[in-house]
Length: 478
Image (tube, rainbow, N blue to C red; front, side, top):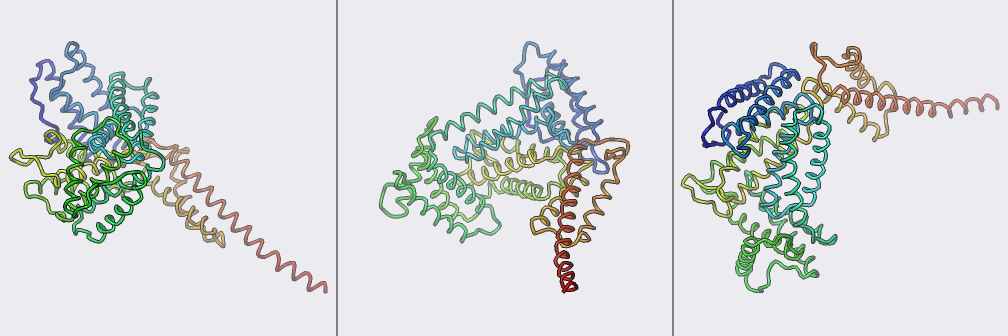
């Protein structure tokens, strides 16, 4: 296993058997996720979870007097927890305590990077805060079913995330309702500019459009006494002034900066960054090209997965991406990316690499929170029903069908799926996979939509025929 960070603290001989067992468990979990010939089975995952918890209990007994020690046992244990967590999601136990571990690990990384970046959207914090509340409910529900060793670990990590989230919310506490939309727009432009910088062809026109938007925002902010620069000299003088002010403000960040200071600093960063990327046009220094290509490849693969998630994602696959990103993140020195000789990157490479790293973590987060509480074994059925429901909803929005006959393809597909049930349950071999309720509810919604469309078509057909019949009667009577 090469993806775990190397930990060189000497290993207590009493912990060697625990390490050996954990390595064996990790190997089994890796084989489980790599085997595409069959679905991941609940029984296999739960059995490995029980084995892992047994080792955690043994480790706690050995470390009664050295609770804070960290060595290779802990890094392998973290791998096991991460894999088990993603495996729980794969078998549809997304809303149970073990599945929370992978989510919490990713959220902590995201929050740390938001704090490091200084600038982020309130929407980022709202999304993370909402998902943290959901995770707390899953932990609370698992108090009777799962080991207190796991729950204590999750609650401790949750507390760290809550504290970081509170600091991030405090940093934006002085933003007023009228300034917040402009602040969010500036955050959006800064991220978009970073994205432009990683395109295969540098988008000059798009970057110029962002420059126009920045100038418009600068005018809108003037009534609030907010300006990116004070001098009236040449463009070079203004950029030099903005760069200097930006370095000073970032060197001594206030715990809760005033709105004026926060937005001015962000405005300067946008102008400086736009000027920098127009000058560089995506050219990365050779010393950092390898890490750039690796991060770009990870970002692109995760973006592709986010588009095809419902049909192609096995949640345990995310572990490979998480470990690669963690290794890159942990290799930074004092927050800086360094080359083979240990020299820190320049501002351009630093911010470009950080953008790709943070974007990749954000995509992992999105894929985790978007995971449906349905077993991998039932996903093909679930996805078909999801597509059917979307089609039926669109048909209804467009005015329905003119004849019940137009609903035959939908009805035939729904009936074929319904006939797959055995005693009301969808079976895979002899196993009853997780997510029966979600699939059954989706099937019922599809049947209900089809029934409503059929009734509307029949009513419309009857209404069209009634006037003709009445007219005919009047002619005969006359």
